[in-house]
Image 1 (cartoon, rainbow, N blue to C red):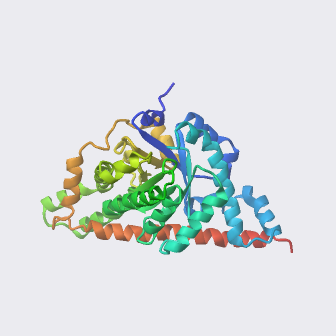
Image 2 (image 1 turned 135 degrees about the vertical axis):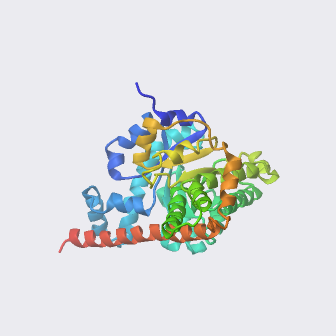
Image 3 (image 1 turned 90 degrees about the horizontal axis):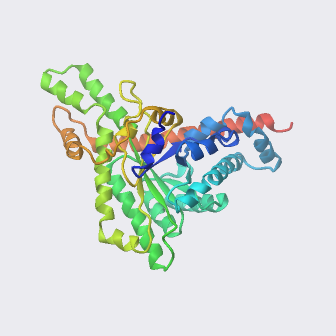
Length: 381
């Protein structure tokens, strides 16, 4: 029987979650099979995933009609559909949550992307989602924006599990880690248990390479006057995201060695694991599992879309690599400043965050629009 490399990865201390959730997946028994036999131990979702799942899928019609009969507005109908899928997925993953002592078995749901820059609205929605979904193993996704991080700190202090999403820069990850720590410190100072709270920091990958590779391709097309310059540009292609992630992991190690973290760990706190997100390879010239193979390592999570799960199960090359070639990673990021390369990584990260929020807002609004149309169509005349 062929080796399932997803199960091998677990032996290196990395958890594989799936970046996908649909009602079909739940009702067909496929999710249960993935969890029980394929090593999947968590689910991440986002507005783009729900748009694909719900728009044009008749499986949701009966519940939409029930919402219409109850006189619910479209937004509440949307929530009734999504919350049901999240609860059902949480129930399927509950044995993983129990067996792992609350390390895994989580299902993530994002607060509305339209409030990414509103701290109080994010806090309010995170509380409401957590209460209404009513599952210990739900994780509320909050963007790691300037407005999002104070919300992360507050809801962690209230005992709500958080997946901090849309992290691109190493600095944004560091700020996220300290927001988590401050939230735990606040809760501990109130004499409350901190051992049941879990968090991940979702650090995005392929979008970084897509952005930087595009800039390099533009420079090469415009014409390069020296072979050395061309070589420097080509040396960076497809390498920045993994290098950036390896540096973030080094920062993670420093943070968990700090006195402040150690004091929390002594009270039973769980580490906030780095979660590698945006892991499907966009460029067909690259390995379809490069964002898995290169970042396997302890106390991490990798969330994979279904195609990457299949590819990895088939041909991932499993080894602990998250700390290999770390010096080269630092050099590569430093080389972006070379006048021959001239890529401003801070600017790239800022662009990606703005783009990332937009990539969640647009499908969210599109889903609301298609739900409005479906409500109109299914409503009794």
